[in-house]
Length: 566
Ligand SMILES: [Mn+2]
Image (cartoon, rainbow, N blue to C red; front, side):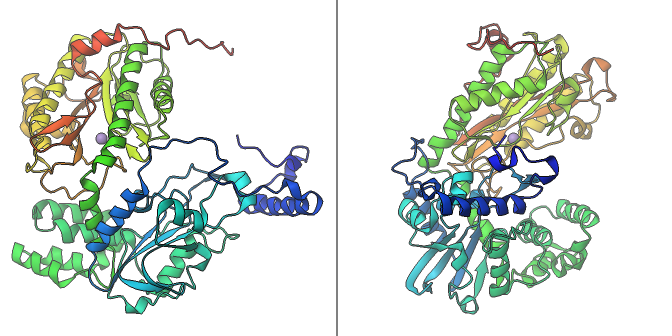
């Protein structure tokens, strides 16, 4: 746990800090006291020259600059793109969640700190008195006293020199930067953060930056990001599969009453032909404040991985595959889900992966049938199949690899039959991975195999019962987000997608009880190449034979014993 100020250790419970603001107040007070009594104790700004060694294989400033230039080249005339850093999320009291940057922001800047905003101008503008500015980054300021507690900051000068931004300034100068918002025909945001939390002691935190932007740029007062997101989906996909779109909208309207006020959605639902639907979409384009267009451009850019990105993504995936290998060697029936989770995550850290790309899913038996199970607290796996959907995040890039293994080291006949059906479905999915194929082609291929296989095993009778046991799709893009940006159009060389069929048969399902509580998913990460695909997670075994063989091997961690705390 983080240290509290020494001042607090001896004081009675009722005087201990109860809020972040309170701690901040004491911090400032003790900081001032230190200045008065002992100036030496105020830390100097920590420069790169004295910082301990860090990894050096991050995306280069040139990469981020090129991404900004590619995006700027696609902006409409007289427009500005506005991208905000991710909000700080509070966990409880004065403890925040570990900060994680907005992937769009990371992609465009490499800046990893909160309370920042990036502006990209189609035509050069004057910002903060400087003419000819095409890109401006407003960052949180340096603050040695805060940095002693919460870590190093780049500051505006550091962002300029280390990230190669043309113009940088402190976030407190954003409001007075002299931006003539009325001059822009289009104000483009990929996503406007509405769930910000105001830090009353920080006059230029993200909450204030967004408020300044909304006020100066004239964002509609009733702007609702949830409504905007559904409208954007209708604009983009409203003519692809109209039956499914109408079902989708009706489902959303039930959950989100705000959608009922959308003129676009009402016109779309009232239209009875494709021509009328197209007319409805065209009659309700995004306005001057536009949160659709930039998202589409970022989808297109981020979906094609550059060689520089692939170095990091391949590493995240290989690390995750090594996690699966090591855990397969260690897995025992007496282990619990949490320990298995910890072993995956330990391997990630050993290889320098900072995070998991998503909460690790480790579920045995009944828990393997819960698609996004995150509780991971079953204590003994016995010999129920354990589904392990875990992905390392390495320098921002997330893997997504699932393996399903029998803790005793061998599959039972029923487990094996379901497993081999999922494996056959995955092979069919891989075979559909090639440039030009519809995004849904691997998914359809897996569904056909699963449907036929479940019928053959007598688990289902009719084809449409398949969705009961295989309720998710087989593929999504992968990158800075585990469910990454992409257009979901035809596959292109440079896409990285998952191929992840699964079958889940919870207890009580209308089939022979011998299948109950078997949940299997096999998930790999495929790079679409010029001619087909490359399985980037192939180092983790997939076949029954290969898994059972690996599970019989000793692990390097085999002798790791901890004392019994009872
Ligand atoms: Mn996945």
